[in-house]
Image (cartoon, rainbow, N blue to C red; front, side):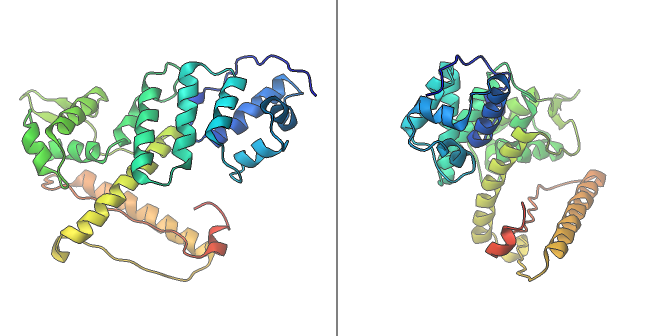
Length: 288
């Protein structure tokens, strides 16, 4: 058995990750540069695993971590109490298939990350945590809003609670995305926003799931004249599909510019465009 050498603290920050498999891959690679004995066999020996390649299979998505093994890994890596809690949440977040549970775990991960000192891009990603943050930011651009939280909560579709409305206003103001003007009304600071780093990307993925649920509600609730839902199912080459994605990206840019130039907005609209493969062989050709 390989001698058990002490593990020194790694410069890799666990709280920068939303994918526990990616963290394991980066962490183990970092350890290999510090200790040539730090192999998958070495890890398997320390964790009493039958297969020396089990952790590699976990990283590749071919195996899942049990709760017992997750605790063992935390002890082996000498995680702090907070790191252990965060890593356990990462594993649960990755393994659950329920949107409600995924939202629950994601909210807890985001909350823990906000109070962690070692974080890149520590605040801005919060804007994408809740769908109504985006809607309320647009709301104050077209309404003379002060503190009518009950009205604001009712005006949104679907409606939210006054407490959620108040919390959203506080968050948006804290992030510098809205502010009070000379007349003491809230106003939007910037015309449009876009997404950024890897953690924001994970947050946006979570946001997109919220918006998909709202879209299903709108499809069932709104009359056809008040919505526009259409679908295309097409056969095409990967090259043509990539070109279609570029066209969609161009359309998004054009819509952003239209909104930016609009001097008299009087409504808030959600425009969602999706494109994804319906054929297994096609989907294996690369990341979509």
